[in-house]
Image (cartoon, rainbow, N blue to C red):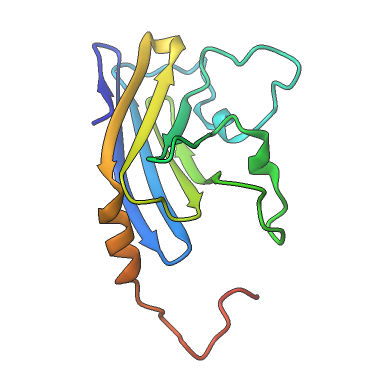
Length: 159
């Protein structure tokens, strides 16, 4: 659980490790439905460009043991998929929402260094202060080392 208030709960609902990075899921649940809010819009990186970030934007970030950080507000997440990013990357994946619940998936590249990996969220529209959950980066690295290539005879980097 990242945060639980009288209005909202936000949790890490899954984490998968791969040889090149890891994927995690964030689930946010509102106590009461709010049809005024488009919970999906947090995946639209930069849609508010030139304007303040809206209060109803669910901010998600990751801090690594080496001090580096990535967030769902970083413009570098717009790196073309066929190009290597200039640094660490938090890339939004699939998401599903309704008026009360939102589940978002994020890809983090590359794997973290040894040490703590801190997942952070903040949601001003729901009076949710910056909240943190620390994960041992070694657990992610160990899981990545145990990853199984499903079809070794197929180059999975191409279509």
